[in-house]
Image 1 (tube, protein in one colour):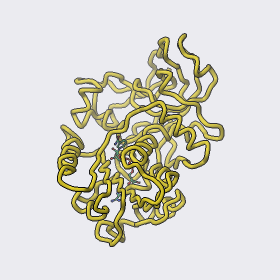
Image 2 (cartoon, helix red, strand yellow):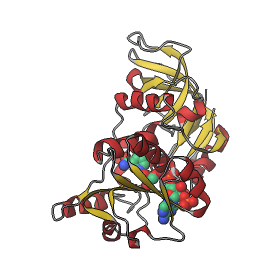
Image 3 (cartoon, helix red, strand yellow):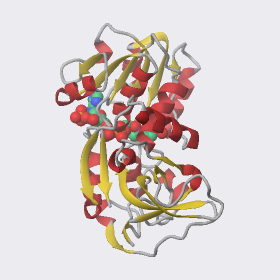
Image 4 (cartoon, protein in one colour):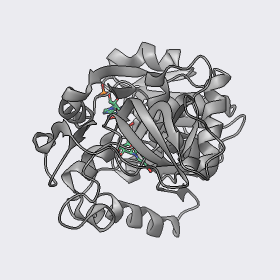
Length: 322
Ligand SMILES: NC(=O)c1ccc[n+]([C@@H]2O[C@H](COP(=O)([O-])OP(=O)(O)OC[C@H]3O[C@@H](n4cnc5c(N)ncnc54)[C@H](OP(=O)(O)O)[C@@H]3O)[C@@H](O)[C@H]2O)c1
């Protein structure tokens, strides 16, 4: 099969499109013919092996699985003998730890969910990691509910565009922070208010919010906390940071600071829970969540897709079709 492969950690130029062996599904696995795979900043970090702490999980000297990508949607080609939930021919979406920028991906059966009727493979592929992060941030970490005021920075990005829609679905009054070119997009996602950061600094304005999801961390923690109510919840969610530990140092600082203030500072890492994939499928079915697709690229342009997401100006999601 054709696949994007990397023999070593490095920038997008380490990626090659080549022929590799077809993966074989184990008894609990599903072999999926991948139709589309979305890429995000986490894929870029894994490709480069930076921050270095990631190498403890993904391989010390070189990436353990030479195929990048995690999120996908496609058609079931074969199933292992213990799999009963899906059958060949079913359209599914989900995560694979063995790489998705390839014609086929092997996935544990509980890491896939049916693609909802009316959702395309490109749209479904855009969902898994970014929407899961938005769901867990809003519902589980901040416990957003009706009547709460929620501010989301990077509201036009992969996580932010889902977070705006999910916070609205949970009944909150939502403010999205984005650049001028994305104001109409963020309003169309359902945001009640939009702050254009090129004109207004929300940390210096009068409004206070019960919850802030900070996907960009363009301002220091202390400035963002000024925009939080006295017992509000702040989720610092930028994955960037130093080359050794990435955001870990900031996460620890926020946790320590939490002990000295009534405000709740809650950095978190999303966890791939099969049940949440089904919740996301329901949100797609009911139309409460619609993925925003920025670009669709062919497999040969996967390196460009990763360069683009690393630049940090994505509007919604970047999807590679196979
Ligand atoms: N906690 C977790 O488990 C988890 C999981 C996934 C991702 N993340 C992290 O979540 C963060 C967001 O990821 P993403 O995929 O959504 O990134 P993204 O798609 O690159 O989105 C970033 C968005 O922010 C906008 N932006 C840039 N500067 C801004 C500013 N000062 N104020 C407001 N918006 C601004 C960008 O558009 P313009 O430049 O046009 O304004 C872009 O639309 C990343 O740091 C990622 O590592 C965390």
